Image 1: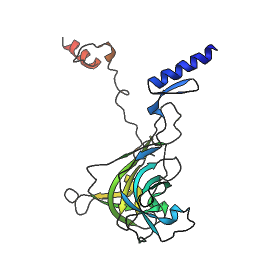
Image 2 (image 1 turned 180 degrees about the vertical axis):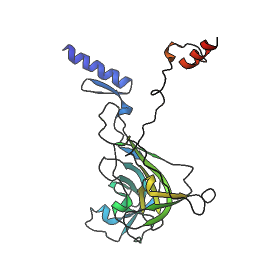
Image 3 (image 1 turned 135 degrees about the horizontal axis):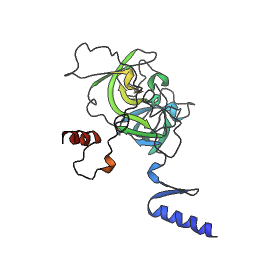
Image 4 (image 1 turned 90 degrees about the vertical axis):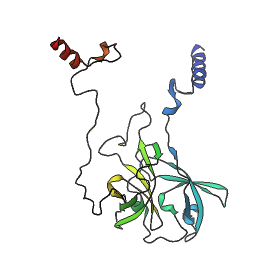
Length: 253
């Protein structure tokens, strides 16, 4: 009986402080899986066959507006789209379901040419990279060479819950990928990583830019370890000094 009372008290405490209580463990609600992120209200055309589970509607198009994107590890991003003619929201469509105009694109690229990598984790966020937002984009596809387009936003994965074992590589320097959402000039949309794109600015990019000779970043950068200990735990001065600075001062004195 005492255990039951204790559990109820913990649940009330969790609710009051906006925490999650589950099997004796209290966690902040913001540490729960995110799964979904907002998208810009981009007007798109949806291939009708994707709305009928590919059973009919081939060659037909329905107008829509993007609402959100979902990230499930090992799958393509799933887009949620508002369909105003039906007053309905349709969920879980890949990037290949969407066009910028109601006509067959040329070339008509498959999903694996439009999204290069699967989602890497449940943690997902969308951002707009202001500085490069108005620049000219070129993506290097698997099978259709270079395709040009304009920037929409970037969808990025991360490991959102520090209490859960990280089974993904979304935070590994050599494996992490950004998913830049590009409206292609052929009428399709694409999600491409930084190292499969070139971005050109009319002012600061030279006419013939260099070919990158970069290598994939594999280092973990941090600043608190790997050098002389600062011993700051013993400092209470507002303008504190490191152990080396204190030692140098004592030698001069």
